[in-house]
Amino acid sequence: MSEGPAARRLRYLQAMGIPLWVPRERGASTPATAVSEPSADGSGGDEGLGWDELQAQVAACTRCGLERTRTQAVFGVGDRRARWMFVGEAPGADEDRRGEPFVGRAGRLLDAMLRAIDLERGQVYIANILKCRPPHNRDPLPEEVACCEPYLQRQVALAAPALIVALGRIAAHNLLKTQTSLGGLRGRVHRYGPQGIPVVVTYHPAYLLRSPGEKRKVWEDLCHARRVVAQADDDAAH
Ligand code: SF4
Image (cartoon, rainbow, N blue to C red; front, side, top):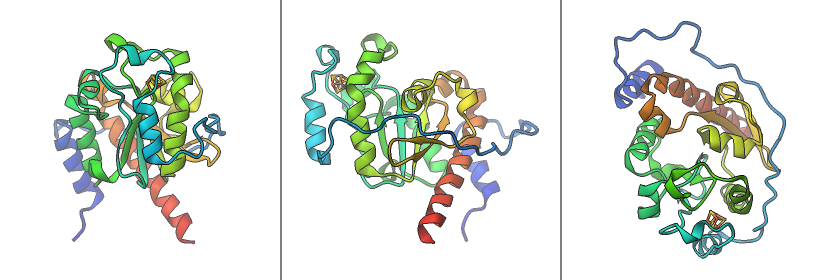
């Protein structure tokens, strides 16, 4: 028998380390769905490249200067035809060393978030706004984002996911070209690129490690994201 929503929520709370006796916030259960206008260009400057060519180009990239301090570029990982694409900010120290996005503690928390919605890492595609680690994990500079953006745009065009989940403020702001607070972006469906791919916004796992009280909001966002993918599947079937 398949697991119901209540059992799945319980499993999420356990996986995320949330005490089970804490009552759920009143009125915070179902974020409203609104649609914002397309806001990112998404046209890309690396049109025509296939996955392997694109990955090779990123590995050798010297466009923004971060190649001088990186160990290696971190291209992305997962199913290149996934329905779900998760986009974070930039590689950290662990990612820079291993060449894979979302490893270490934040990566394990992301894995727990994925399992809560019945997904494994290999079933989704995970990438970052920036492919190379900014020194001392500082925020990406606008000019670095501008240099790197065509790579992500091409990844999105190639994967053609049903949904992009923006992990954290920096990913959301750069994908959606907005300065709206993360709280103001949650609970809505935004659009990315010429294909108008739906985007939902939630907290970055690294932030959740520092602010575990926000994990409940992430559960709400993941439920919201599931509904968006289910709607896309429904639309595709008809
Ligand atoms: S961050 Fe992006 S643009 Fe900058 S060197 Fe790395 S791959 Fe190139």
